[in-house]
Image 1: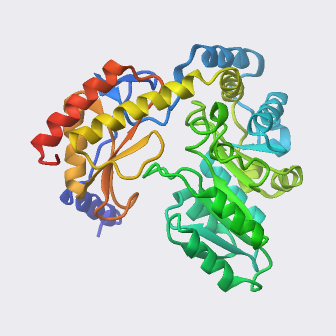
Image 2: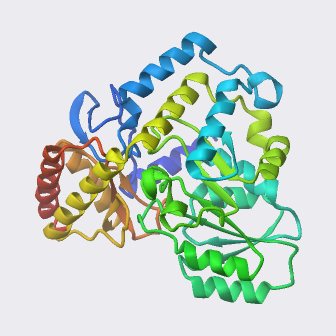
Length: 392
C-alpha cells in the first residue's frame, strides 16, 4: 500500500464535497486591483486595510534599511539579531498604543503561540471566547493551564464561569479577540474588563483586526473603548493595516523582560528583517500624522455594506470593514466565489473548518485603496452572480 494513500483520499474528499481549491497567483503588489492568474481583478480579499502594503514611503524606507542593514537579521534576538532599528520600532509602537512596553514577534500567530504558554502555568485557568482565532486556540493548547470556553461575546456566561471557578486557581486569564475575523463584530471589552477587575483576572486581547481600523488614528479596539492601561496583554499585527509583516505584544515592562527570556518564537526563530522593521516604523509615522486613511477605509466600508444590504445579501452582524457575505452551503459558497472571479472580482470563499459547518461565507475585506468605481463594479458582479445562483 502506498504510504501517501491517506492524503490522496483526503484530497479527493475535498473535491467531492466541492471545497477543493487551487491557490491563485498574484503577479504584482497587493492593492485594490491585482493581476491574479494573469487577469486584472478587483481585490476584496486582502487584510491590507489602509493600502500601506504598496505605499511609496514604506517602500523607500525598506530600501534604505536594506542598504544599511542588509536583508536579514542574521540570528534570533537573544544572540545577535536584536538590531537598534528593532528597538526603535518597539519604542514607536509602545508610544502609538499608549502602553508601557512592546515586544515584537515574527507574526501575530507567533505572538499567541509564544506568549500564552510563557505567561501561564499549571494551576492557572484560561477563559476563552468560543470564536477566538485559531492562533489563540493553539496557544492555549500549548499552555499547561486549564481552560474554559464561554459563549461568543456572552458576558453573562463569562461571569458564570468566573463565579464557578473562583478560588480554584492561582491566576485567571480572560482571552478574546478585539475584532473577530470571520464575522467582523467587536468584543464587549468594557464589560469584560469590569468583570476581570472584580475577579482579579488578567485580560488578554488579540487586536489583529482592530489595529489601524478602530480608535484614534487606528490605535485599536482598546483605544476605541478608552480602555488604555486597563488591558494587561494586547496582541497587534504588523501584516494587516500596517501592511508589512510581524506581530507584537503591548504590555508591562516586566512582562516584556520575561517574554524575552521565555517566549519560544523569540528564542528559536530569526528576528524580523530590517526592511520590514523600517517599513513598519514608517507606517506608524503615517498613522500618527493623519487619520485620512482610516476615514477613507470606513467610508468605503459603509458604502459597500449599504450596497450589499440593498441587494439583499446576508452580511451578518459586522461592526467593522470585515464584511461576511453569508451563503451557508459550502459548495455553493465556493461556486459563488469562483463565479465572482470570472466576473473580475476576487473574494475568497471561507468554509469549514475555518467557520462552522453550514456557515460558509465570502468574506469581503474593504481597503482605503479602493475607489468608488472599484466598489460599484464589484457590487454589479455580486448582483449578477447572486441572482444567477439564487442567493438573492
